[in-house]
Image (cartoon, rainbow, N blue to C red; front, side, top):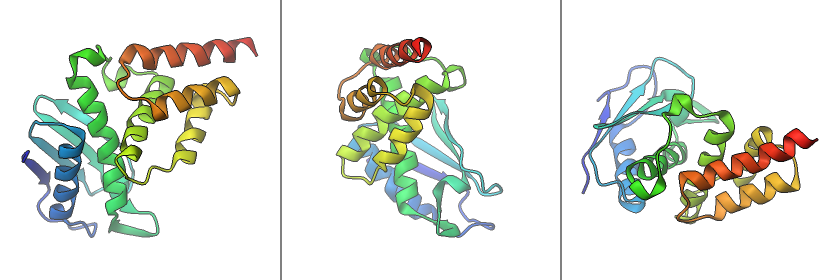
Length: 184
């Protein structure tokens, strides 16, 4: 079992349970295949929902508390949101740790289309593990960055259903959809 640490230990502004977050993370790490210790840092002082990989060595995921909240019950933890956010990030971590995936720029250096395409690939794999994935929401987000076209829809489908893709495959999708957007 991989070690998972969640900080803070107690929450003052939100109704979160670190043990519940740790349990979801531990299960996801085993299913996804991330065999390194993980530290999850939750910023409970903001209702915003950003989540990112702060470090690979050691592995640290930073999460603004809004990302883990139940959308119908603000300030309360949603296990579904925890699984969605951590699953997406952990698939991206697994990709980064896999030399065959290829060299990926730092998250801050990714373009919005690249980040959105990689998210589609990550969340599609999460959906195949049986987690709720909001496919239509992801498709709409993808279309906003890659265009509302048959080419973009086909590219999304390749990412969503893909397995064993590489960073070059993700970049190829971005180049393909960019070419159709510049023609219009």
